[in-house]
Length: 133
Image 1 (cartoon, rainbow, N blue to C red):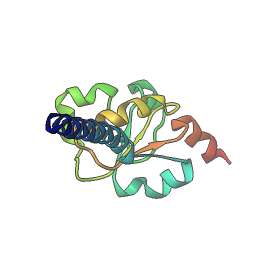
Image 2 (image 1 turned 30 degrees about the vertical axis):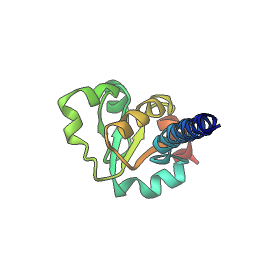
Image 3 (image 1 turned 30 degrees about the horizontal axis):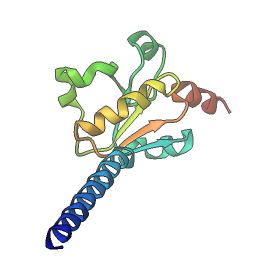
Image 4 (image 1 turned 45 degrees about the vertical axis):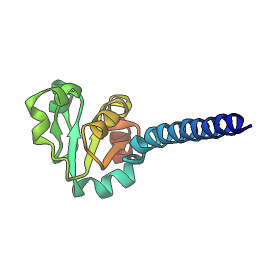
C-alpha cells in the first residue's frame, strides 16, 4: 500500500514537471512575436523617426529611391561587422521591397537581442503607392 502511494506521488510530480515544461516552451515561442510589430504605412511613417530605419533592398533599388534617413543593409548584416552599427537599445524599423525579407529578418533580430522591431507592411512598394495618393 505504501509503495502504491509513492508511485502515485512520483507520477503526479512527473506529470506536473512535464506540463510545466510544455507551458514554458509555448511561452518562449510567443515571446519572439511580442517584440515584433507590423505597421501600416501611416503608423510606420509616424513612428520611424523614433528609431533606426533600415532598408533591406538591393543597392540598386536603394539608389533609385529610399525613405529619407534610411540606411541600407543586406539581410545578412547580422553575420557581419555591420551588426554593431544597429543599436539594440533603440527601436529598429525595417523595410524591403514588399515586406517579406523584413518578416524573415525580424525574428533573427529578436534572437540577437533587439527588443523593438517594426516592419513596414507591404514594404517600400506600399510606401510609394501611399505617397502618390
